Image (cartoon, rainbow over all chains, first blue to last red; front, side, top):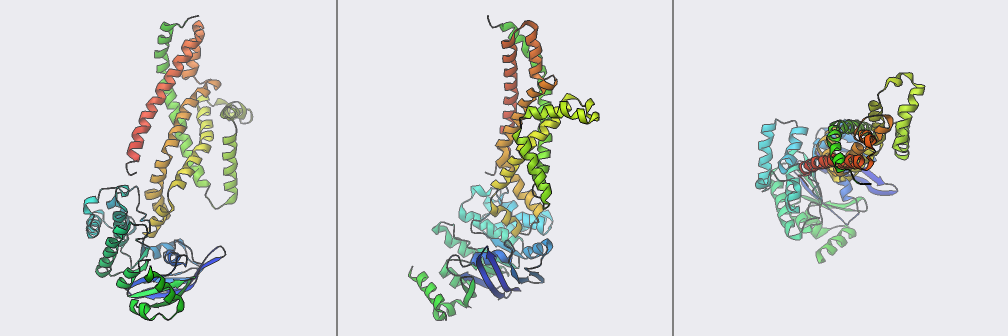
Length: 246
Length: 221
């Protein structure tokens, strides 16, 4: 379903990803945790090629992209299999809520406008903002914007959704609602989810598997329970400890 | 010496009659500048390095020499070497030289507008699977347009006022007509103040138009 092999990425002399391998089944929810600056976000951004990796391959379904040799067409094919939820929402500012959700359907999936509209309204309803459908993003709170960000991601019917710290720029009181929504959608939609997050209890609760990254490598992975109770590596134990005592 | 009020008032109908022509000349020049500026903005980003060098040379020259020099080179100088340009009307020379000149400035405005669009907007567009063209058309350009509106408005105002320079190559617009009026009875003050007021009215008109446009275009802010 999703298969990443030997993914490497540097910024100048700084090696951010040092050969990442991940494979995920359809519908699997994977939380990626680890200290800041260890390449978690870069990993997500390499999967949909917002960053160009130096080497490695990414395969989603029937699309395989080799980092050393891919065309603009391959790039777009892979991106159509994924969607991203951004840390700072990144809704299209010049579009209404409805249009934000509609665009991936009409423009990218070339769906019939009327059908797309119904589907979009359904998604907006799922994230609980039907009454805001004609508002512009600037009129919404951070939490509301992120709900629409999630609806927009679902609108492209991706096989993989990449969540890049979806709650990091939200007010603490709004975080719970978004996490709740992601949990609910994880149950309802059958797409694979990769979630970079610092919300440890959320990660442990929602994820089928937790990946701990440090220094551009995957140090350890396993079910939340395995990692919480029997982390093998000292680095992992230390990280989880500092998080828990916080 | 006293201000000839009757004459002053009499100037207006004749000068106002020149308003549509001046406005037309300004708008045509601006439209030509804008189209050229868009082309330059695109050429600036092509892969071929020599094209980019030529474009920067172009921008550098037209931004760094006085406009009136460029007009003279264009209207008086060029026909000396290109005989077919001898039949060129002063109006055509004016529009063409303004287009060359202002486009160098407007292309900078366009660049600024594009820079003002947050990186995340482009990334979001790509992440849902849009291609570059769709990204520009649906997301980037509409936002860039809004942030460049005030500067574009300034440019339009400057271009319309600049039509007064066309006077120097013999185009009969508001200023040159006021000179004719002034010469009739040596009422310079009256005629030129009237000309100034007519220009002012013209620009006020443009301001109203710009405000309306901004209100429409900025509704998402």
